[in-house]
Length: 307
Image (cartoon, rainbow, N blue to C red; front, side, top):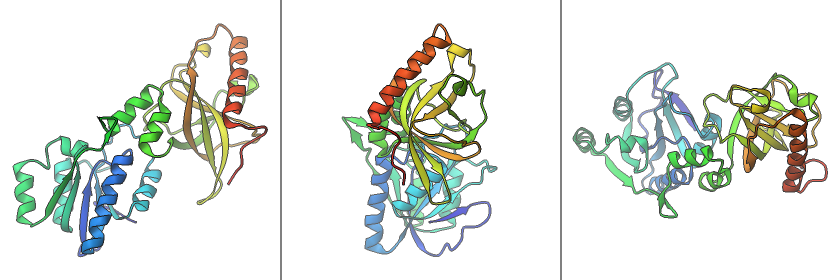
């Protein structure tokens, strides 16, 4: 997949494209269906799948950019057109700019997307614009899950209530955040439960405060992750008068230094609510119970297998 920033160039604009329009933040099963439909049509007429991706810098994201781009490529996207982080432009102008600079044969629009919900693609200007250029427009109806529309907003609500397993079912993969290990207060180490502190989480949708069972992938090189089962503490740490939302993880069976390493942290199961314990001894007792429950969930005697 070729990624093209619109403030530099459009690349080879002569290749006819099927333009697929959605926010593609969650890259959930609705987005996957959208791209599968596009690829089916592209095989019939020889066009390639292209995605214009306006970036809403105010919205918290579900899917890390790296993961999103890998999934877009996996689902057959040949070209990704995006704005640089410095650019400010309306979605309407962004779409007009993209269409004017490409040979667009067809537009497939996600009927659930925030773009479509703004009525831009239903406006008379858009209809006249696409008809003038003889562009076929297909709006796919929303994907229904248990008689409820599958949307990025729904997944965000599930994460906010700690329902990470339900979110995983709609995403088709665990909810994941990516960041580098930063130095913290090292309180976990003093309590006998050393943890890694995850930096660079400000852009992500934050799960409900609590303790989770999960999986961490430690970046070894460009293509290799080393996996360990983890207990994740996400929240404000009321027992020690914490103020900011933090994500920490205790790796089961692991010893070593991971500072500055990039890690992928997946939330697999909500174990319990965040609590304000009376003292550190009560906290340690609960952490020991959490560890036993985590090992039971992982069905581990020592540590997980790594790939």
